[in-house]
Amino acid sequence: MKDFIDHLEGRGYASNTINLYVYAVTQLSERVPEVTNQALLEHKDWLVATFAPKTANNRIGAINVYLDFIGYEGMRLKGIKVQQKPFLDNVITNEQYEMLKSGLRAEEDWFWYYVVRVLACTGARVSELQQFKATHIKAGYIDIVSKGQKLRRIWIPKPVCDEVAEWCKRLGREDGPLFPGPKGNAMSARGISLGLKRAAERHGVNPDVVYPHSFRHLFAKNFIARNPDIALLADLMGHESIETTRIYLRRSASEQRDAVDTAIDW
Image 1 (cartoon, rainbow, N blue to C red):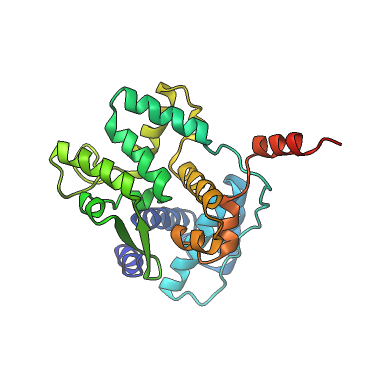
Image 2: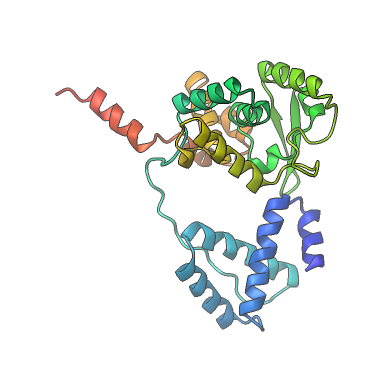
Protein backbone atom coordinates (compact mmCIF):
# COMPACT_ATOMS: atom_id res chain seq x y z
CA MET A 1 0.00 0.00 0.00
CA LYS A 2 2.94 2.33 0.64
CA ASP A 3 3.90 2.14 -3.05
CA PHE A 4 0.36 3.16 -3.99
CA ILE A 5 0.48 6.09 -1.55
CA ASP A 6 3.85 7.19 -2.98
CA HIS A 7 2.33 6.96 -6.47
CA LEU A 8 -0.61 9.19 -5.48
CA GLU A 9 1.64 11.70 -3.76
CA GLY A 10 3.86 11.78 -6.84
CA ARG A 11 0.86 12.69 -8.96
CA GLY A 12 -0.06 15.55 -6.64
CA TYR A 13 -3.18 14.11 -5.02
CA ALA A 14 -4.35 15.95 -1.89
CA SER A 15 -3.88 14.19 1.44
CA ASN A 16 -7.64 13.85 1.96
CA THR A 17 -8.02 12.23 -1.46
CA ILE A 18 -5.14 9.86 -0.74
CA ASN A 19 -6.80 8.80 2.52
CA LEU A 20 -10.08 8.15 0.71
CA TYR A 21 -8.35 6.15 -2.03
CA VAL A 22 -6.42 4.05 0.48
CA TYR A 23 -9.64 3.37 2.38
CA ALA A 24 -11.45 2.32 -0.82
CA VAL A 25 -8.61 0.00 -1.89
CA THR A 26 -8.29 -1.50 1.60
CA GLN A 27 -12.03 -2.16 1.54
CA LEU A 28 -11.66 -3.80 -1.87
CA SER A 29 -8.80 -6.00 -0.65
CA GLU A 30 -10.80 -7.16 2.35
CA ARG A 31 -13.78 -8.13 0.22
CA VAL A 32 -11.98 -9.32 -2.92
CA PRO A 33 -9.08 -11.74 -2.23
CA GLU A 34 -8.29 -12.03 -5.94
CA VAL A 35 -8.98 -9.27 -8.47
CA THR A 36 -11.00 -10.56 -11.42
CA ASN A 37 -13.57 -8.89 -13.65
CA GLN A 38 -16.38 -10.80 -11.99
CA ALA A 39 -15.14 -9.96 -8.50
CA LEU A 40 -14.91 -6.28 -9.43
CA LEU A 41 -18.47 -6.26 -10.77
CA GLU A 42 -19.75 -7.93 -7.60
CA HIS A 43 -17.88 -5.40 -5.46
CA LYS A 44 -19.40 -2.56 -7.49
CA ASP A 45 -22.89 -4.01 -6.93
CA TRP A 46 -22.16 -4.09 -3.20
CA LEU A 47 -20.98 -0.46 -3.23
CA VAL A 48 -24.08 0.70 -5.10
CA ALA A 49 -26.38 -1.21 -2.74
CA THR A 50 -24.58 -0.04 0.41
CA PHE A 51 -23.66 3.60 -0.14
CA ALA A 52 -25.06 6.81 -1.57
CA PRO A 53 -24.35 7.25 -5.31
CA LYS A 54 -21.69 9.92 -4.75
CA THR A 55 -19.81 7.76 -2.25
CA ALA A 56 -20.06 4.70 -4.47
CA ASN A 57 -18.69 6.68 -7.41
CA ASN A 58 -15.81 7.98 -5.30
CA ARG A 59 -14.88 4.40 -4.33
CA ILE A 60 -15.18 3.24 -7.94
CA GLY A 61 -12.91 6.04 -9.09
CA ALA A 62 -10.33 5.12 -6.46
CA ILE A 63 -10.43 1.47 -7.50
CA ASN A 64 -9.87 2.36 -11.14
CA VAL A 65 -6.81 4.44 -10.22
CA TYR A 66 -5.51 1.47 -8.24
CA LEU A 67 -6.14 -0.93 -11.14
CA ASP A 68 -4.11 1.36 -13.39
CA PHE A 69 -1.36 1.48 -10.79
CA ILE A 70 -1.03 -2.31 -10.53
CA GLY A 71 -1.31 -2.71 -14.30
CA TYR A 72 -4.43 -4.86 -14.15
CA GLU A 73 -5.27 -5.86 -17.72
CA GLY A 74 -8.94 -6.49 -17.16
CA MET A 75 -11.90 -4.15 -17.03
CA ARG A 76 -12.36 -0.76 -15.41
CA LEU A 77 -15.54 -0.08 -13.50
CA LYS A 78 -18.05 2.45 -14.80
CA GLY A 79 -19.51 4.96 -12.39
CA ILE A 80 -23.22 5.21 -11.83
CA LYS A 81 -25.21 8.16 -13.16
CA VAL A 82 -26.34 10.62 -10.52
CA GLN A 83 -29.35 12.75 -11.34
CA GLN A 84 -28.49 16.37 -10.57
CA LYS A 85 -31.21 18.30 -8.81
CA PRO A 86 -32.03 21.64 -10.47
CA PHE A 87 -31.67 23.38 -7.09
CA LEU A 88 -29.32 23.37 -4.12
CA ASP A 89 -30.20 22.12 -0.67
CA ASN A 90 -28.61 23.08 2.62
CA VAL A 91 -26.42 25.94 1.44
CA ILE A 92 -25.70 28.87 3.75
CA THR A 93 -27.38 32.18 2.90
CA ASN A 94 -25.82 35.62 3.25
CA GLU A 95 -28.12 36.30 6.18
CA GLN A 96 -26.95 33.16 7.98
CA TYR A 97 -23.33 33.98 7.14
CA GLU A 98 -23.69 37.45 8.69
CA MET A 99 -25.40 35.97 11.75
CA LEU A 100 -22.57 33.48 12.22
CA LYS A 101 -19.88 36.14 11.77
CA SER A 102 -21.60 38.51 14.19
CA GLY A 103 -21.92 35.82 16.83
CA LEU A 104 -18.29 34.75 16.58
CA ARG A 105 -17.12 38.36 16.60
CA ALA A 106 -19.23 39.14 19.67
CA GLU A 107 -17.70 36.30 21.66
CA GLU A 108 -14.24 37.13 20.26
CA ASP A 109 -13.79 33.62 18.93
CA TRP A 110 -11.31 34.84 16.35
CA PHE A 111 -10.07 31.40 15.30
CA TRP A 112 -13.47 30.29 13.96
CA TYR A 113 -14.36 33.81 12.85
CA TYR A 114 -11.41 33.80 10.46
CA VAL A 115 -12.02 30.21 9.35
CA VAL A 116 -15.47 31.38 8.24
CA ARG A 117 -14.12 34.59 6.67
CA VAL A 118 -11.35 32.90 4.70
CA LEU A 119 -13.60 30.11 3.42
CA ALA A 120 -16.34 32.52 2.33
CA CYS A 121 -14.01 35.10 0.78
CA THR A 122 -11.68 32.77 -1.14
CA GLY A 123 -13.84 29.83 -2.24
CA ALA A 124 -11.14 27.50 -0.93
CA ARG A 125 -11.82 23.80 -0.47
CA VAL A 126 -11.23 22.47 3.05
CA SER A 127 -8.14 20.58 1.83
CA GLU A 128 -6.81 23.89 0.47
CA LEU A 129 -7.65 25.79 3.64
CA GLN A 130 -5.44 23.33 5.53
CA GLN A 131 -2.48 24.54 3.46
CA PHE A 132 -2.90 28.23 4.33
CA LYS A 133 -0.02 29.73 6.35
CA ALA A 134 0.63 33.14 7.85
CA THR A 135 3.13 33.79 5.05
CA HIS A 136 0.34 33.42 2.49
CA ILE A 137 -1.60 36.16 4.25
CA LYS A 138 1.40 38.48 3.85
CA ALA A 139 1.65 37.57 0.14
CA GLY A 140 -2.10 37.92 -0.47
CA TYR A 141 -2.41 34.58 -2.23
CA ILE A 142 -1.56 30.89 -2.05
CA ASP A 143 -0.50 28.70 -4.96
CA ILE A 144 -2.00 25.21 -4.82
CA VAL A 145 -0.73 22.32 -6.92
CA SER A 146 -3.70 20.06 -7.62
CA LYS A 147 -3.80 16.53 -8.94
CA GLY A 148 -2.28 16.35 -12.37
CA GLN A 149 0.31 18.93 -11.25
CA LYS A 150 -1.94 21.84 -12.21
CA LEU A 151 -1.29 25.16 -10.51
CA ARG A 152 -4.15 27.14 -9.03
CA ARG A 153 -3.72 30.51 -7.37
CA ILE A 154 -6.19 31.39 -4.64
CA TRP A 155 -6.36 35.14 -4.11
CA ILE A 156 -7.05 36.42 -0.61
CA PRO A 157 -8.92 39.77 -0.67
CA LYS A 158 -6.94 42.66 0.82
CA PRO A 159 -9.46 43.47 3.59
CA VAL A 160 -9.29 39.83 4.73
CA CYS A 161 -5.48 39.88 4.54
CA ASP A 162 -5.37 43.01 6.70
CA GLU A 163 -7.70 41.53 9.32
CA VAL A 164 -5.99 38.15 9.48
CA ALA A 165 -2.50 39.70 9.49
CA GLU A 166 -3.44 41.75 12.54
CA TRP A 167 -4.78 38.61 14.24
CA CYS A 168 -1.56 36.72 13.45
CA LYS A 169 0.46 39.63 14.82
CA ARG A 170 -1.44 39.49 18.11
CA LEU A 171 -0.74 35.76 18.32
CA GLY A 172 2.90 36.14 17.33
CA ARG A 173 2.30 33.71 14.47
CA GLU A 174 4.71 34.36 11.62
CA ASP A 175 4.73 30.95 9.94
CA GLY A 176 3.17 27.50 10.20
CA PRO A 177 -0.47 26.55 9.61
CA LEU A 178 -2.88 29.45 9.74
CA PHE A 179 -5.47 27.24 11.44
CA PRO A 180 -3.56 24.69 13.55
CA GLY A 181 -5.04 21.78 15.44
CA PRO A 182 -4.21 20.76 19.03
CA LYS A 183 -0.80 19.36 18.06
CA GLY A 184 0.25 22.37 16.02
CA ASN A 185 -0.24 20.75 12.63
CA ALA A 186 -2.95 21.95 10.27
CA MET A 187 -6.36 21.12 11.72
CA SER A 188 -7.96 18.06 10.14
CA ALA A 189 -10.85 18.41 7.72
CA ARG A 190 -13.07 16.65 10.24
CA GLY A 191 -11.96 19.03 12.97
CA ILE A 192 -12.82 22.03 10.81
CA SER A 193 -16.22 20.59 9.91
CA LEU A 194 -17.11 19.79 13.52
CA GLY A 195 -15.92 23.19 14.73
CA LEU A 196 -18.12 24.96 12.20
CA LYS A 197 -21.15 22.90 13.25
CA ARG A 198 -20.56 23.78 16.90
CA ALA A 199 -20.17 27.46 16.05
CA ALA A 200 -23.45 27.37 14.13
CA GLU A 201 -25.29 25.76 17.04
CA ARG A 202 -23.94 28.37 19.47
CA HIS A 203 -25.17 31.25 17.34
CA GLY A 204 -28.57 30.05 16.21
CA VAL A 205 -27.67 29.09 12.65
CA ASN A 206 -28.95 25.82 11.20
CA PRO A 207 -25.88 23.51 11.44
CA ASP A 208 -27.05 21.62 8.35
CA VAL A 209 -26.01 24.57 6.17
CA VAL A 210 -22.68 25.21 7.91
CA TYR A 211 -19.93 23.02 6.49
CA PRO A 212 -16.76 23.93 4.56
CA HIS A 213 -18.10 23.38 1.04
CA SER A 214 -21.21 25.46 1.76
CA PHE A 215 -19.01 28.57 1.92
CA ARG A 216 -17.64 27.69 -1.53
CA HIS A 217 -21.19 27.94 -2.88
CA LEU A 218 -21.61 31.25 -1.07
CA PHE A 219 -18.39 32.58 -2.61
CA ALA A 220 -19.47 31.60 -6.13
CA LYS A 221 -22.96 33.05 -5.77
CA ASN A 222 -21.75 36.35 -4.32
CA PHE A 223 -18.90 36.75 -6.80
CA ILE A 224 -21.06 36.22 -9.88
CA ALA A 225 -23.64 38.68 -8.52
CA ARG A 226 -20.94 41.35 -8.53
CA ASN A 227 -18.90 40.20 -11.54
CA PRO A 228 -20.75 38.26 -14.27
CA ASP A 229 -17.54 36.81 -15.78
CA ILE A 230 -18.24 33.10 -15.31
CA ALA A 231 -14.99 32.12 -17.05
CA LEU A 232 -13.05 34.11 -14.45
CA LEU A 233 -15.05 32.48 -11.65
CA ALA A 234 -14.26 29.04 -13.08
CA ASP A 235 -10.56 29.90 -12.96
CA LEU A 236 -10.81 31.21 -9.41
CA MET A 237 -12.54 28.04 -8.25
CA GLY A 238 -10.17 25.74 -10.08
CA HIS A 239 -12.72 24.25 -12.46
CA GLU A 240 -11.68 22.84 -15.82
CA SER A 241 -15.20 23.21 -17.18
CA ILE A 242 -17.58 26.14 -16.87
CA GLU A 243 -20.37 23.57 -16.60
CA THR A 244 -18.96 22.57 -13.21
CA THR A 245 -19.06 26.20 -12.13
CA ARG A 246 -22.72 26.50 -13.16
CA ILE A 247 -23.65 23.90 -10.54
CA TYR A 248 -22.50 26.29 -7.83
CA LEU A 249 -24.70 29.03 -9.21
CA ARG A 250 -27.97 27.17 -8.88
CA ARG A 251 -30.40 28.70 -6.47
CA SER A 252 -31.68 26.94 -3.40
CA ALA A 253 -35.22 25.57 -3.40
CA SER A 254 -36.41 28.44 -1.19
CA GLU A 255 -34.74 31.00 -3.48
CA GLN A 256 -36.49 29.46 -6.47
CA ARG A 257 -39.80 29.64 -4.63
CA ASP A 258 -39.24 33.32 -3.71
CA ALA A 259 -38.26 34.14 -7.31
CA VAL A 260 -41.40 32.51 -8.69
CA ASP A 261 -43.66 34.19 -6.14
CA THR A 262 -42.10 37.60 -6.89
CA ALA A 263 -42.02 37.31 -10.68
CA ILE A 264 -45.40 35.81 -11.45
CA ASP A 265 -48.27 38.26 -11.01
CA TRP A 266 -50.58 37.26 -13.85
